[in-house]
Image (cartoon, rainbow, N blue to C red; front, side, top):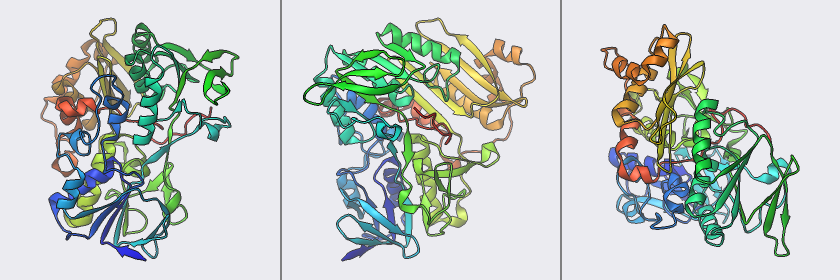
Length: 476
């Protein structure tokens, strides 16, 4: 028993939806030749919505409102859309093995699905406490956040916890996003993480201090430099207290765990080349097997801006763009350049909104007003006399665009003290100079333009950060 397709997208996350849209716009397939296989029971959706709009206490976002590709101000791809486009959705289906040589996938029900070209978009899974020797994360009031099922469990836990205590384990993207959502739902929050400050892979101490102070003003308590060791539970198995390594016991009506993610590569280990915890691909998103491509969180691909260093980026913008690029490379290989991606990250919590692009290496130069209730501050990273990365809180579309331009150009800097004085003005002035840059892959607008202006994107603008460029997470 089996089915055969020309093109198979394995995985039903963000990347799958954007790949489908690119296929539909470029053509090159006939009805019934393309399918998407997903373990989830719904069509691909904008996963960032789960940590933002989905958790709102009033008027929360629900499907079908955030199916892909609304996060990029594009079409809403409902089940009806896939049917109209002749794309088969194979939902609620788990693939248990893959044979790259034979070009087949075997599902948990025993069905064999064959392909001529495969796009691996399996994404990543949330790291579980058990992987760090801590048991009991199956308790009803311990929550992770990676998919719709996780989000529903989190919503149910919050609804039964109003006015209670929540402990958030982890100080990265998911921890910060969920802490904000919990506060909005009138729950008292304590954040626990081993680093010296939140968002340790990206934020400097000065930047982190601002956000921690802001969160504190909202009622969040930070417990830093320690880790969870075990739980206290009641007779029903629910967690009542979190026990820390420093001996403290934190009362908990619910626990949210956000300690990183791991790429879903297991089906292809030993068959495809791996690097940086993901599947290694070239500039066309093509793996070591010419009939297989990998995109999104699972793909480790060369970043031209970083001298083609291989990076694995865990962010929705990368998932969207690598998916589109892979489809372009499959359908029009002679016309598709190697991907030239500018790493880009963003977040929106409470009334705050920041963006970062490039790489956070080199000396850091802070600028702007860190004290205002309407903050407007940023930082440059400078290495070997060139801008390598830029961060800005509270910027406009034009300002974010200017920062992206100077990072892509690797704008030279001769005086760091002068750079600090000029601040954002430096980026605006330098970006207007007539200097050729590398352009944008596939002729798309830079990501900062899309997200800074998209009303829908604002509601779904957060995604799990996990490992920073594939660096191994500090063990708990």
